[in-house]
Image 1 (cartoon, helix red, strand yellow):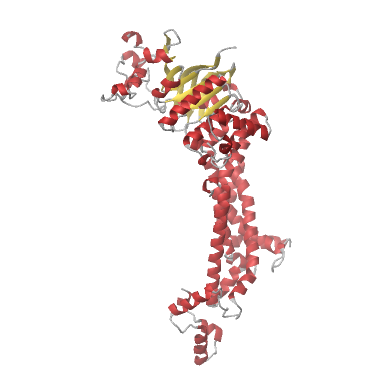
Image 2: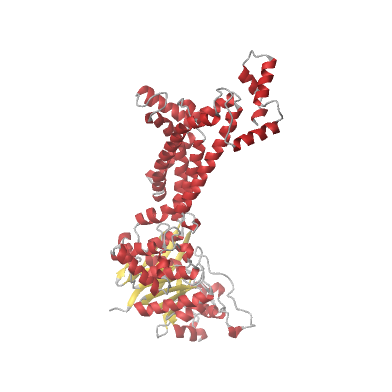
Amino acid sequence: MIRVIPGDPALTVAGVDASESDIAAIRAKLGTDKPLAAQYGQWLLDVFRFDFGHSLTSGRPVTQLILERFPLTLSLAVLGIILSVLIAIPLGVISAVQRWSFWDYLGMLFSQAGMAIPSFWLGILLLLLLSIKYRVFPLFGSGSFSHLVLPSVSLGIARAAVLLRLTRASMIEELSREYIITARAKGLTERMVNYKHALKNALLPVITIAGIQLGYMLGGAIIIEQVFSLPGLGRLFLFAVYQRDFPLIQGGVVFVAFVFSFINFSVDLLYSLLNPRIRIT
Amino acid sequence: MDPVLLDIQNLDVSFVKPEKSAHALRGMDLTIESGEIHALVGESGSGKTVTSMGIMGLIPMPPGRINAGRIVFKGTDLTGLSQAKMRKIRGRQIGMVFQEPARYFNPSLKIGEQIVEMLMLHLGLDKKKAIDQALSFLDVAGMVRSRRVLNSYPHELSGGMKQRAMIAMAICCHPALLIADEPTTALDVTLQRQILQLIRDLKKQFDMGILFISHNLGIVREIADRISVIYAGRIVESAPLNAFFDHTRHPYTRALLRSIPSAKKRGQRLQAISGQVPDAENIPPGCSFHPRCRQAETVCRREMPPTISYGNGHQAACHMIDAHE
């Protein structure tokens, strides 16, 4: 697909004033003069040897470039998901237990707003307020925890909005199940009914979705990294696309797919720990 | 001691919603003595489950509303109790067994945990003692290898074992009253017999009063000491077991008995009762059974029949009883 996009990678490498013969030589070196199928075959063979090739622009190995950027993206994604879970689950549970109460309306308001506000806009607002006006957090750069706070808040709020709705819906559904009547008929307090009996079952779908969201975030948060000028995977891949750096793009796609599958697999394992019905004995 | 354990007097419950309201119980009377199995029989939607939820204080209010009547349990009117006081009675004084154990157990907690939490809460036992008591009650409920059951999740047990576990859980705090809401409906016939036998044994062993809710007169015949038939939120006939089957008085009860399949009636066409139970949202005036009753006359369409005692604890509510006796 990338190859069909107009723009010859050889031109990027050679520069604007390169001669015809130079370009042809570079094409031969990159292998872009061969048919697409042959190029793909060669690339597949290399991938099986964990060789993703070299970036066209920097000339460094793709694997090295990705691994350099990954820790930042990882910490951003993990912080974001922790934050969203910490916001979403308590608020969602309170919303469900005290439906149509003040807290429920507050939670729903937060959730509506969180879904409606684009995270880049929230990011810019946070930057304006907390970095420029009050200088609590640094404006640019990376490397310390304080650099990660605002981006992960902007990322986390949007995810929290979705998770909150899910937690509320899931909790309400569990509270209408028959075993809740049993729990009440046993004389348990409402606290035990809600937090021991209903919550454990209600969290299952929430964990699945949170895991999938973590997977998405690990692919790099392009817009947020752009807003906060963080050198994460999102920016790496964005520039790769701009510059038709196809080995880097391909490597990135494989990497993201791998991380995504890995996260989903881990969530499935976690799920079987929490849900005895699908545990393999 | 007063032998009457539970005395429901003139209970009237409706569910009121803005668009419609349903009159679920319309002056219902029922008494249960210790060591007695009182069967409450009726078709779906006749008010059986509302009755049991009413005793447990678990009718959601709103939309539910108790318009009149009392539920006197051991001398205390339960309708006036706070939720906090009801919690001390639920599970502790009144145990409950449900129809489908698969749906009424929490799927993600072990059976043992679900029993133990109750013992710790009501009897203040420590964990170890609670486990011991749970084990002994699983034994009482006829469970072989009770320790394994204790450590199982509900889905790991068969339907019959789940129902035994449910019964063990319901009686683990020595309740004076056990409500069994169609406890055998979800089980196959062989298991039904075993569970009925178990319930009979438990009644003797613990001298419990048992409210046995069912729609199946065949099963009720095997287990009940006394039977009450509920129709559209009212008891239409109530009698001790033998009188109930030998001197049936109410036309509805007779029709119900005719509709039980049996070996004697082999080859004959089963006599179903025509029509359906009236919707609790619009119950016909007068005797609520009159649209389906073969003997109905003008008075049945106009006036609600009073409940009349015929001696030996036999009561029925029908205008036509003397007419056809």
